[in-house]
Length: 502
Ligand SMILES: Nc1ncnc2c1ncn2[C@@H]1O[C@H](COP(=O)(O)OP(=O)(O)OP(=O)(O)O)[C@@H](O)[C@H]1O
Ligand SMILES: Cc1ncc(CO)c(N)n1
Ligand SMILES: [Mg+2]
Image (cartoon, rainbow, N blue to C red; front, side, top):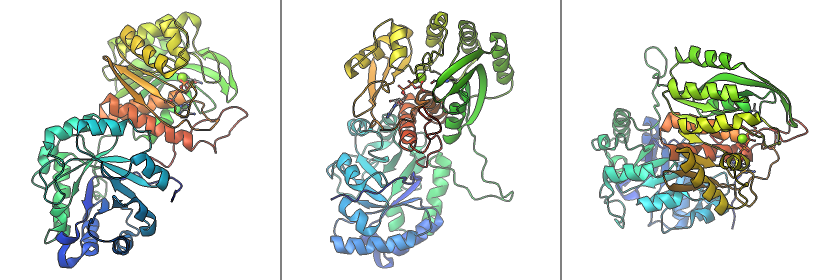
């Protein structure tokens, strides 16, 4: 059975996630409790009832769909994948002993939301290793002992929650006896929201209880800051991270500084840009390069640093050895935020973007940065080895390069073949694979620029490299899946930086 739904699916706001309990809702009934709670600020609803038969659950689910119509709040069904379609729900939340998430994704298609319960670091790691796009978020818990769910998993506590959260780049919601008074203990855990059952279903006044939970979330700094405009009519000012790209210009708009600024913007960061080179370039390749004088690259950077706060920097095409050396000095002596280096040497179209005598200068810059993102050919050049042709060789080279450079390396797999495009993240002896289905599109121009910029922007939000790389990979994969409409020229077109998945 396949009820595949086309994308895109909404990115769920997990801030305040209501899980229904028919018994606790009592005479008021689930629809009434949900209606009051959503009106007061609940952002996601899961219909959970292990006792109702399928027909009864479908009937209740359809009532909830009516209640949620027009609110933008997604409705998920607990466990029963086969009822998503009959209810018309937005997706399903599955447990560890329910259906395999990959199978659920096959049945429901790309348009459905899929959440997965996790109870340990091992289960979080396993979930994070699933192909990108299999699951949309993780439930993590139970944080505290709970009566509303047969306690087959021991409580993880706030510290266990923080440890689990640190293991995954996927959005995460804490669950398990979460109350307004206990929320403070979850501050700093990194979760994107909390799921509650009795705190709302058993409340005498679900709307008041919802408002109390939202206030506690705001105090704990958890969830998206949804705040009604105050007297000024303006939403609460929240800090937008700034990210700088130091790179070349690609007039076709698919790579270089143009792609960087689009990725920053798509991921909620303010983008700044310092130009290192002009290229005459189309989808068919580069016909000319005009390096910016190194002294002027330095002046651009220093003028900016004297005024603009930066949360991350991405370094792309440097073009010449002199510019590479100048930027290395600036990164070493003046930049005090995380730096991602995309060691641009050859474009996907095969155009050389780095002067031969500049390779050494780029390699000398690498140890100064926090993450280097070579493609296969670039890693081979930096190692002085043949290009990896298998995943095993890719893993070996990632580890070898990370050791040689003394920093994290993400060795990208776009140049290899196979059903998946696997990137290998090597850091301090730890190896992680970021897997995604290889997208059958010719519009792959600027994938590397887009990925490294997305990593920089995500790190500016999350300050965790595993989370940043995973989320950037997810974003980039979606950008490829939505790229077919961008056949702008005779050659490979750009990815879709502003795709609807994010
Ligand atoms: N067809 C594809 N399907 C899915 N992911 C892809 C595909 N092609 C590339 N990727 C992914 O895109 C990212 C960039 O990898 P790639 O090897 O293309 O970088 P690059 O060669 O530096 O790109 P650029 O031409 O922009 O410099 C990686 O995460 C890679 O796995
Ligand atoms: C300017 C520029 N930077 C990077 C790339 C990587 O492909 C490109 N094609 N053009
Ligand atoms: Mg590249």
